[in-house]
Amino acid sequence: MAKKCCSKDRRIKYFKKVNKGVSNARNFAVKKSIADYILPLDADDKLQTNYIEKCLEILLNDDKAKVVYGIVENFGASSGALKLANFDFDYLIFSNMIHCSGLFRKKDWEKAQGYDEKMVEGYEDWEFWVSMLKHGGYAKKIDTACLYYRSKPLSRMKGIDSKKRYKLIAYIMHKHPELYSKFLFNYSKELNINFSYSYYLGIKMYQKEDLIQLQKAKEQYVYRLNEILKEYTYFQRKKILFYWYRKGKLNLSFINFLLY
Image 1 (tube, rainbow, N blue to C red):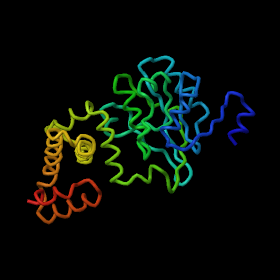
Image 2 (cartoon, rainbow, N blue to C red):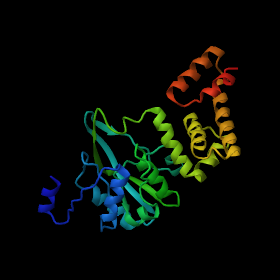
Image 3 (cartoon, rainbow, N blue to C red):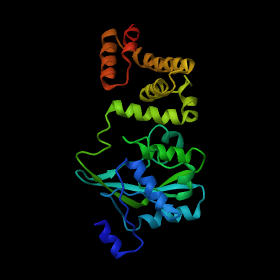
């Protein structure tokens, strides 16, 4: 099919390579591209006719815009609009609101050093947007362009269970510590317990030789746990703690002293 498209339009190029993950494939394609603007599109998704035109119009007229993306409509196994929050960088570092098919400049991809090829299990788009936007600029969602996303009963993203999710977030936090430490060690600021655990996990996985940092991360995580658990009875705390343990966001060594 791809070769057939090449025969009809000489602008289309065909390349074949060994599967080394999404990030590797995207980086390979961007390097091969001679365009100034890049838009990744998964093979089973579709774009509204005016999608690229509407996104490009903003990038051409605003140097501070780093990525422009449209709304999302599901089709396939499910239908309906996918609700995406408006861009806010402080929100982006905790939850991704930019889908993979945003339009961006190739030069900004180069500055961000491309997609992280270590992230073969997922969330590579999220980390890429963080890398691209952490030095300034903004992302723009426009309601006049639409990505049609094919929903499937099974997909790579649906295969990310909670344990894998915490490890992926831990890696992102480890890679961008300057973005997260200011939130995590501010005890007065409310923070999702999942991210407190992910930060602790990241230190434990990647900086375990730094005993001071490891202890600080552990203390911060335990503080968040105690804040949540203090209103519950002993048996309620026990039930909650073992539920968290089964979900992969609690170290077994924490359970005993958190029960009392």
